[in-house]
Image 1: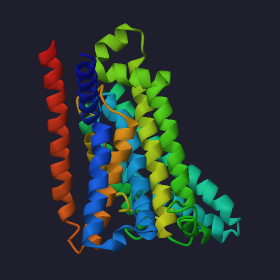
Image 2 (image 1 turned 45 degrees about the vertical axis):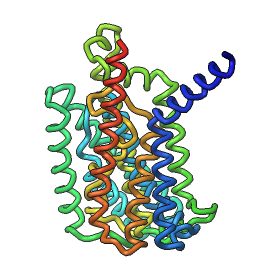
Image 3 (image 1 turned 180 degrees about the vertical axis):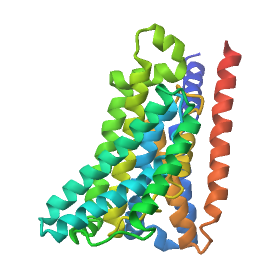
Length: 335
């Protein structure tokens, strides 16, 4: 009897493990690494992993903000355009400081601050449209998406803005294994966001609003104020992603965030978040972003057109949604 009980307990633990979406995502990532390495052994190298992490950092930054937004029951389509606009404005600021002969590290610090403030400004506009004018998040962020993209092109003349500090691009050179300085900073931001979402009151309010906004209001949560904070956070992280692209490319390009909103949403959904709100985890988003960037690098290395990435991503999103649907169905059945 004891043996039967032990076997049943072990089987239950295995089922729970394979029912954990983060564990399954980790398995998928390992399988992808093995697959691409089998086709071309160069894939399993420090240089390739360093390149994957450089691609992963800006994607996960905007996906982190999108995680908070989606869990709260909203959507932010403006993050890609915010990346481009913040990068361009920061680039002009750093260019001006270099012309004046200012210290390069000071210029980088000020540029980062400017990029963050531009992102926060766009986020606050989103929050204002949603809370004060009662525009639905899809339309509100679609409006700011177009406005930010247009401003970035007008402000830059449609061309990358260079002439900034030379040391900015040096920061993207990996020095700690596959990690660069901005990459390590992004890891720190991931940890902070994880603590805020899963351990702090801010996260509890985000889940509560996404699960049931009416109940959250009844419980005394200032929902409108929290929406402003969530969209400002999303804008802030998109702005920092714009600065990351500057350090990677050595210039601020108005199109640097093109399609970033789709990658962010894909990473969040693949990571297990529900577009209806109330469900999601930072660890899932991190793995979702890692799978996306690994897919792109892997396809290039084995000689497949990167356009196939969209097909792979579509399959992954469909699988994630089906898995989530099966989970919800089994819970409903158990009731």
